[in-house]
Length: 242
Image (cartoon, rainbow, N blue to C red):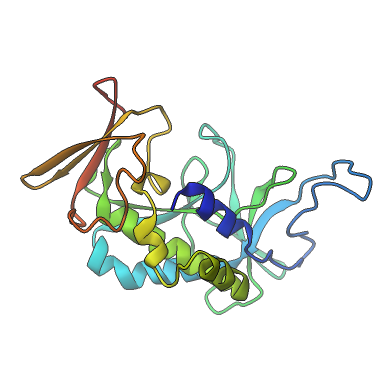
């Protein structure tokens, strides 16, 4: 199961309702096929909170020394994105910890009508939820820890399931329920370098492996031969990719 299924699954999520002057969701074209303006990036707080709750429950098992961030669908070099928690007329800036990446504050806990709103629009014809990223503090740049990627998938799926029946129907059509979908996804779905790579290198204690990146399901989250502490790196023509 590859990235395309995951993206289609998240695209099926129900859009948040309009509130406090914000229009949520978008329409790509009008009845005559003419492009319509994109709508502001915004999501229900409770949707993102589901991912945060799953992370906090499972972190002691998968990644006890880690942090969860939410990544916006913006260019990698974007440095101007801002995100607010909106509750009625109150706006609380959320911490931006990297370009296009923010932390979820607990200030909106229990506020079913709270929204998380970015200063960006959805591109015409596209609507996605933020991508979950989990990183352990002791993992250097360019390296992925297996437990981090596994936990990121569980948190992302918890967020997806807040859409209810649509997501369960999609999982049922693919014979995937619970977190089984995560077992079938490649590690690179949740954490991979932006630059090109041709080899995936896995180090897990005394065990090592080099896998061709182009091989189907070269390294999946459910590959039980690798522990949560396995370190995954990437190379291109023999050179490490950072």
